Image (cartoon, helix red, strand yellow):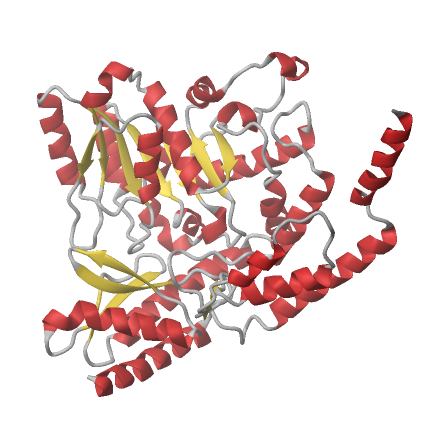
Length: 482
């Protein structure tokens, strides 16, 4: 047995590379990273590829090792050069983020130490750091100091945590689900629908509240619907409002909605995954009036704090309600069952094992300070307004509501208006084939709109001017081909 153990040990020690080997790998990965970032301004935002990365299948898992340079080449050919380049300043589709460089360093430090930030006992400093970040978010949103929160993988898990917590805090039982009512607008993010289903509430009534002319949830219509539901013997229990809808960037009237939630005793959730950190911009104070009155808030630092994907957060005012849903004790973890000074993330989330996400958020916030984040967010607001203004100067284009945050919508209306949807699909396809800028689309009341979502910290005025130039050029090409 000893001989077998030694034989296996010799092979397994390969997993602990020598200093020389680490230095070579570090050098090659840094070379790749530096090259990627050096070329980011001139690289495309979208790579049209017939192969769509199929070549990566040649690098399936095998018994024998592969040299790092070959692997990086495979990444460059099959991943970097196919589809969206989400680090590009030309990425203005969906709700982009960006991926700050110090966040990558934070992830590297967290992965090297493999710090387990799930329970206080295992890594008290790591848990303190994450809870400190969450308390900062609570202060930003006007939540009291004794609120709680969790750093999640994104808005989807954050919304799920909020809905499950609301279900229990409101005292809903399984027998009540078919009579429960959830209020939201048609612009609510689809992750809410998924969370409702996962939370066992698929039998609940989803009440879609009409929107005003700017596609914001109508508080007046909300109260009318709620009164009618109560009179019908139903159980209104959850209201969702948005600060920055994904489609249009609309900001619902949260203060008026909070009045209704308090009056009728409903759980009030704000999905601010996209727009939440715009609260850093002083000029938007009025739009955030009443946000402190919510019961829970979803935020996504990987959107409006420009972090890499996989960084969300949920804030819940009622800490006890959050703990009641998620706290669980296991025999094999009895050593961790001590009187802790801080809430453990595992006690307020579906996750037990989790990445030490706090480092990717804390490091850039501390290295840069808040000032450049405020400036970048305010810049994006002005860029959206500028595009909204300039696209109207091109004959034939119409626009959606004036941007409240950093999303603008536009479409071209040809002489034959029945062809408008098809024409705009073709226009968007041509913009994507060009590749220098990536845009996305949406459909509102059977009308096809092209969206410009400006949120990458690398997106500046020159990219908006480039976009306008591309639109003008593609418009001429499409008109001549008709």
